[in-house]
Length: 470
Image (cartoon, rainbow, N blue to C red; front, top):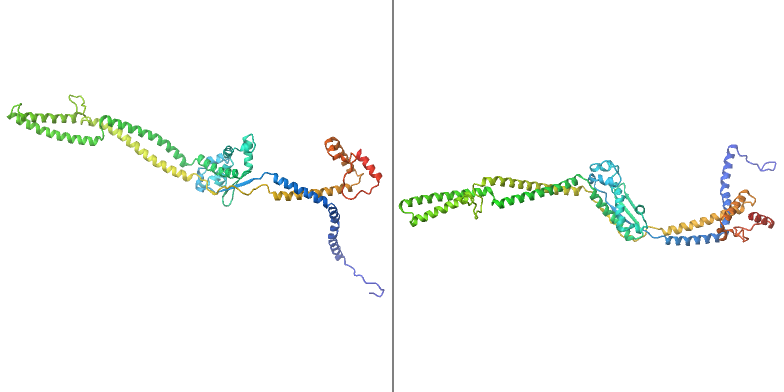
């Protein structure tokens, strides 16, 4: 304390004065904010019954809506990514899937066709109209979805189907949503079946084209082989030509033996004729043997002919005919053997092409088969009830604040006068609303208002009512 009896006051420098004012304002802000929120908190507390009723009504309405919405079930199936070496035969598949582009080879097919991988082709196929139409017909979806046109049924099916491919693993997921869990699982399985069938059907790989070509060649060669075998058998049966080389060798040997026996018999006959007469028994016996040997030799040499006429007991062709028959026989035999060789080679190539085609066609490998779901996927009833209740409370809070702000506006305010005129005009143009109670205030009934009663004099209230009526 100074000598004058006053308490000394410390002066605040100029540079510290600004910081002091800023600190004071920061300390006062929370208090001011609390004071600003206090009227709203008091207002909500006064209207707590209304808020509680509105929240209860919103909860009941949300429960009703949540249970009235039909339940949906989702069935999932996952497919392994197709083999990279199987992408060479997917040009036609890409065209049907709507991807377009130039056909590629091997692992480059996906890039050249305008897609990132062969799995993207599968995704495109699953979303094609060909697959959709097959599912629509199989499960009668036009009747289930209540659609009259196939385009609407496709759109509804696409909305209930989700096909995605994992970028890292390449696994393809097919998710089908339906009100019937069994139908959802059946449709997911049908997607996989249609994908496998369509890929195998439209695959245009080199192995498949080779297999188709070989099928046509095999059919033609089989016909030529049957015709050659038929001609050869008819010729052999008609001319008793079983095996011309073997038959010729055997007949020449038999003719030589007969010729030797005939020469010996003729020599013996000549000796006997010089000693005995022709009526002698020995002469007649040797003469008969000579005649028989000559007859057999003639049969071998002339096909059993007597004076050039064919015999009935000729089993083999004559030696004289063997050269002529051998040419035709060799030609027919050669044609038959050629056709047999070609048929055998084509059959081997055909089997190899079938094996190669089976390797090149992308097969659909199911990782997780579709099962009948037991838990619904839609609607989320708890979330609907929670959000509905919160929305109802927010709407009630907004109504309270709007009503309070409306009551706080002066009656003579131009904005309120304009809003009143607009409301009155709309009310007159819609008599149905007035009959249902919206125009109750204009009919003389008391309208319930929020907050405290107005403290305005009765004359002012009458004046305001008169203006509202106008």
